[in-house]
Length: 385
Image (cartoon, rainbow, N blue to C red; front, side, top):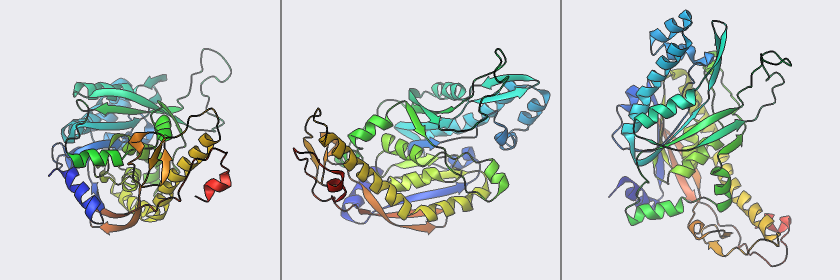
């Protein structure tokens, strides 16, 4: 019986759990301990080469990086930094199962070295590394970060020829190992169906431009805060639900404050997080304890509420066709046949383990029967469902 089939058996027969390991150490060294093909999805955001806040942690991996920076050799330092990341990407290729996906959030960098301002294309260098490893680069996502900074325009201000555009987006690079993932057993196929997402979610999630606010940081240590650039919870939550199924194992080799672990818990996936900075581990633990189960359950419930609002708006639009499908688990209409077996579960409790956490789940309570009436449905009617 495969690991996923085994998860499905317990998922159907008894109260089921997911495990979330948190490891401390250099990512490439810790990943060497993982079995081949044991990971279904990688979601991570590495240190950004040539961004000053990560200079020290990059130089700690290779002393030549700092030496080249002092010499003013920006291009050489850039390449040396990426060669350190290449060690992790090699392990990603080894540990990912066939058809597995790697999602890498990265920003490009701008920097002045020896009075010469230049762009350092981190995203294109990572794409090149993954292609050399045999991955297929799938359509990428542009994360357009919302900002209200009044001084975001840099250079010569209002005068031509000396100004330059600011970087207001980051990349979410999507790579697949080999061809499409093959769901072989009936149990695996059923878990895939139950891991479906709503039709209207798909239309937003699979757009190539995401508008998401950056995550607020609550980090006491100044040194740790200076090295943190956590993405918002919604980013890994979407990716995990887009590119994996329940019971899969998600890996984040640059765990940071633990956002990927939280998203995996909320998505009924197992996870492994690796963090090189031991000062982050108490932050990870605190974030998970503070967010579970109440905050994560609120996010899950919000998906249902947003779907009900979608039903309300569509039912009041006379130009739209009737919705013909029904999800008996949620007791709600859905747009497509593929959504009829979608199942969402709430987190019952999360227990602290020696090196991680264990999450327990219960099924969501059914919504009151929701009938798409021929007359318009009021928002108050919808709230009562």
